[in-house]
Image 1 (cartoon, one colour):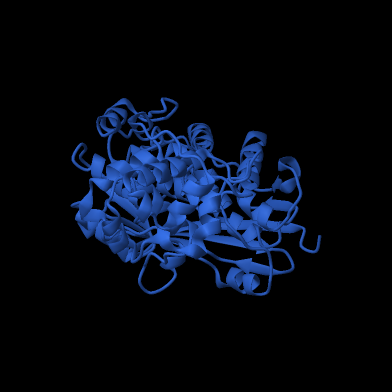
Image 2 (tube, rainbow, N blue to C red):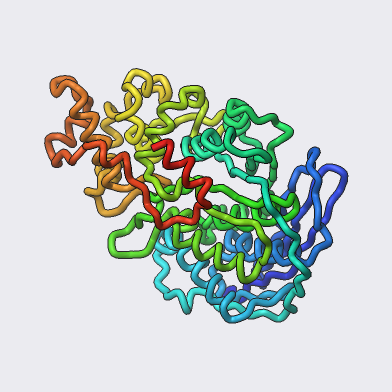
Length: 441
């Protein structure tokens, strides 16, 4: 009510000898202005099409997603676009992304609204006229985050295709190390720095609304822009079938919304109709579960002492497994049927099944709490399978605290190998990618 207008004022593409810049200008009228940017390291790559209207259009649309992080501070009723224009179908597409992509944010902040009423887009700029589309036939970009999933994608594809480039946002030593262990040089990595405007951080400190945003949607548009500038055909994500499960029963509120098949299909539709390049965005791991990814990852021992995916532990100078959050407990649990406990303790620094302070988190991961933890974790059935499998493997007299609790309070589930043969044919993998994945399960 106090700040009804959020304004997308401008975007700009520029370059110098070292970097390509995507700069944005946003404003919450009467409160603050923001100038975030993306910096793409040029390195030795042959960057093309920087003057193209196609690139301008992708960068404009990327700005719509980047703006979500700033819009959420006030959830202004009107989103005014001065530097471009959306048609009715585009407005509907972005309303859905804002509403579902901020589902966890709305839940945490107790915002009661509808998809239709959450935000109203008003375009006062012009449409961008697109030129003829350049032909693209090869090349793969693989976003790397340092966790088990993207390492599995990188490892399974690296020897099957030429012209692969790992992609990363920010300077994470863990990601660098994983990429180099896979056999890629630092020069092959596409690196991007995302600069958050400090005015947003100041607003957060003052108590303006804050919370989870659809980061993977930003990655989708950003990698699409980079694929266009480097003439890359495929963007191979590492989102699995398990990410489709909601966090709140009977409600479409999913921490991983922008990792779901629903978003993937929506983005592919949007890219085909409004971005109009020949690049193709899909998740290589979509047909399989977190359980199967853990099984494959257990064979890739060279990554075991290096990979990290604990968000809490990534905040310090060195990325660690904190050992006290839902993500740590989930990864420990999902790997436990495939990696012996002693080795898991070496990786995580402790036997997480012995931690009594994790009992409530454990119950929620199993699906017996009020909500599923707001983290990138697998399904209830996968967690129950992993726990049941480990209980059957360990002497009943030596069960650690959490496993003993499970056995005393809940039923063990079927742990037959049929759970590890799952393959969801509802996916967007090109046939040559599908064949590789099937061979590895």
